[in-house]
Length: 171
Image (tube, rainbow, N blue to C red; front, top):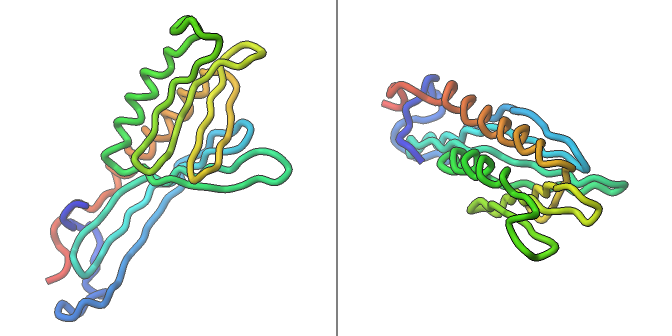
């Protein structure tokens, strides 16, 4: 959480004396990566009017593929967005020669359990598993890592461009 420095006027939501428990939630869809399921990323802002605080994060919503799709989601804290982009830059170097074993996987996980895993497939080539909220989706080919990274980079950019920036809030 950071100190609240709003661009809007939240004074209508508070009488300044009695905490009313009002929370303002804002969100914007960033984009989707599709494979055997979907990864949807949304930017979020949560303003607590009473304590004049704001939180920024991304929601990574996973829908599994198949006849009976399941849905799950994970929260990517703002401080983790850069980490996930840097981790993707590293795990894209995964290849079968990193080990003498027949199978391998290289994984990154957020604090909330969002996971990106690169693994070798028995039929050859590399695959990607993206998991969150006990739901997974799969992508064939390591080139989709760039698309996933772009979603998170775009989400961070959206938050940076639209975050609360001046100190005129509750008086």
